[in-house]
Length: 332
Length: 280
Image (cartoon, rainbow over all chains, first blue to last red; front, side, top):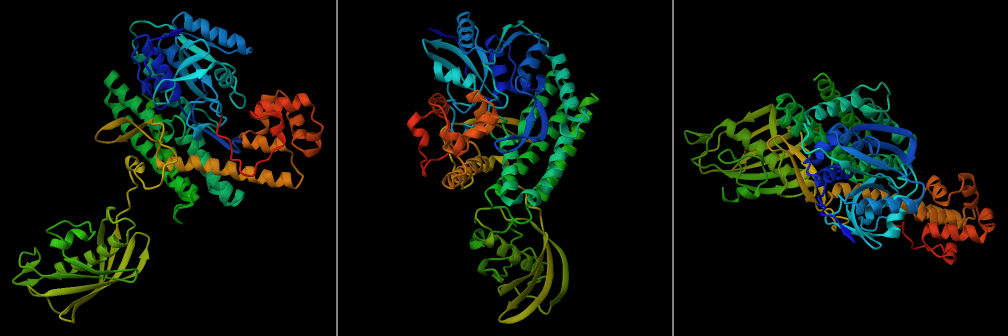
């Protein structure tokens, strides 16, 4: 039996939380927003040609796995990332890694995750958690969404690690193994901000970044006419589920990102970043307002003036604000 | 002034220009005020014109406050935008009681046009038309969303949420998912239920096979099922039809059953009471 002395801390976003908790285990105190910001996690993309749960894919974050990868490499932490073809091999590797005293982060699917709130158990494969020990066929898990540390059986763990569908995890596991004692995080912060600013305002593709928000806003106006009321409402619901549901800590990560900017302002001693954090916070509140009004539409309690046009206007305004913020940040 | 706390208006003493609410319904609002000597608008023993206009506007506000959904909710602030046809025949003296009747004539966007009539001893002493602009209703701050009366779907796991306001900056808190968010999660499950019902009907009509039913019950889509089965999509598509389903080999049947987490015999069962499965 192995049970590492791993501190379970809840977090708003699973991957940033896992990254932060793993580094914390080695004494590198990086908060969750910090991990998210350095990992350049913030993003937006709307992909109408890809369907998930019968609705277009909307994403508020970068590709799964990017946050850990970027954050560790920016911080000069050496890490291993593995995917597997064989289930047995993946579990053997997990056990041997735990045996050598290393807690392991992994990407899993949520449908078969037994300790997950049932309402969240959809075929969603981008969840992350940490396994920090095992006793025969029981594994000890720290899941940032769940209040307390939990356990999972060998068979269930295999099932969630090899869940199928979009972004299938293929047994993906990762861990930092060489963590420097002290790290100057200032260059990492600047590089993270630069990367995010580029992702949001520097990619000339209409589906991603602030252009993507505008594109979604334009599409939203036509939903009711094109698809009818029920489907339009479902599509809207899907956007909101992506924005508010599992692990965004609210407003599609905009709160976490603002918290990162606020913390960075302290670390770098730049009042300018504090200003940006405030603007991001206001912006995040607007996103929450959008999802709040949108949810009234989903339960058919919207007032007549709370139409798709109004929601689209709100989105358009959000895009404008974010464009301003990230243009300023990219010039920093 | 004792009863003024029951009146739901944004004004605070000493600016409160009404004592009690007599009637408030869709058509009209009636309030009463006994002019007291310490009233800020009393001059030389008479309530002056601004007092009367305030009285009219506050009567309108009291009507709106009474009509708002919850009595505790904060009344919206209003500004007097315009006065029309105002005619004041007489000023009420200290000690006299005035009764004010207000009718809403029109609501245009954020402006409300009201007609007011002030009587004293059954004699109309003032009347006029007021245009009141209501302040944009501020959306409820996220913190209060969780306290809405909607029932929460679940209360067994608290999560971390961030929030922001200008004074405190960003803060974290651990709480149950907001009811507004639970509502959109519910919508996803409701839609899954509707899809399941639709599949049931198509099976009854002989268009689809039980495989389609279990696929929907497990919230799967064609591509997900195909990758769990390690079969190509077009083969799965065949099994979704009754003709293809009847030709299934025992091996494939047991493979399907394993993927759906049921026994082979249950594969044919289509329970009309089944709900979309929330994981295992």
